[in-house]
Image (cartoon, rainbow, N blue to C red; front, side, top):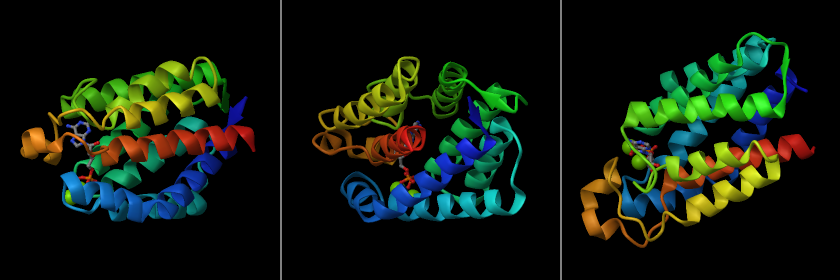
Length: 199
Ligand code: ADP
Ligand code: MG
Ligand code: MG
């Protein structure tokens, strides 16, 4: 079973991963965006770890809802509301259980990912974070490792896509040939989940 401490550690691990990869995320965003995705994510997840350390929510759902609220209030730009919605809606779907199964998390993540698609109006193949998140949520019902591999493959698969949502879509065909920053950070979040489960 996955308890509140597991989810807290997931967020802490994600913050470390995002911080380590911040320059890479910003480089990707400089090619097809405005070169702020690394700093957006780093600022957001630093705020998430600090609010979780201060408030120490006691259920998995409460951890993710607080983390999501914090991202929305800390990160301007597209990714703050989108990742904030992902975590809030996933957390809400987990309810107030003190611990959840990996299968319950897989289902809840599916709800969170659907909420991201609804908020941003994007679908698979639009070269966004959804191209990593949709296959990851699907694969999570198999295993954490399968989810990690699906997210990484999904992020790589954005390279030949033309962006249809977000800032990168303004480039039209010139967005082709670059990996999407948000799909890349999504793969980091799922890798952090798999690392937390393996630790
Ligand atoms: P901004 O584009 O406002 O500077 P970021 O650089 O932090 O925000 O995040 C950009 C990422 O957000 C993109 O790489 C993409 O994955 C994701 N994104 C942008 N718009 C959407 C959308 N409508 N739906 C899903 N993801 C989106
Ligand atoms: Mg940007
Ligand atoms: Mg921006």
